[in-house]
Length: 199
Image 1: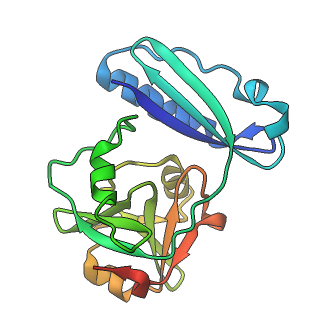
Image 2: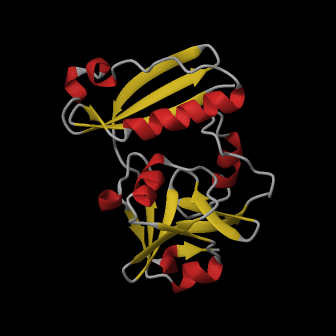
């Protein structure tokens, strides 16, 4: 089994690295292997990619770090979401390199750009981002996401975002949907009007 970690490198500097390392260590502990020290990503990043936003992708497993690559980051354009009910046994609490279960849900998006996944009646995530709903000045994120993203964790620790059990009716009465991940901090979150989240 292989696991993946995606780290944002901004102008040559890895962001939220302690939170990424903590998540990788939790994965290693749960799966019973020792995580080796991470190499110096800032040093490894190609000089051509030390300006602007770069996506660093690490693959690792019980044998250690298997692969590291760096690519320019080009954000996806997401304007609409289709609501998809996931089976209750869907498990992506670890960041598996095998995303086939999520891909099967994404394949049901129809004409929408991505899917918003509901499990056990509660909103969770899209296929590749954590979810935030804005109610005026209040920002709420699902208490039980499919994956606890590092950007989400950072915002929770900073007290900017709070957890709640969110359902379809909350989505419909929210002012705005914000999509975040390691590459999409709150200030660059993808913003969607709830009317664009379609069944």
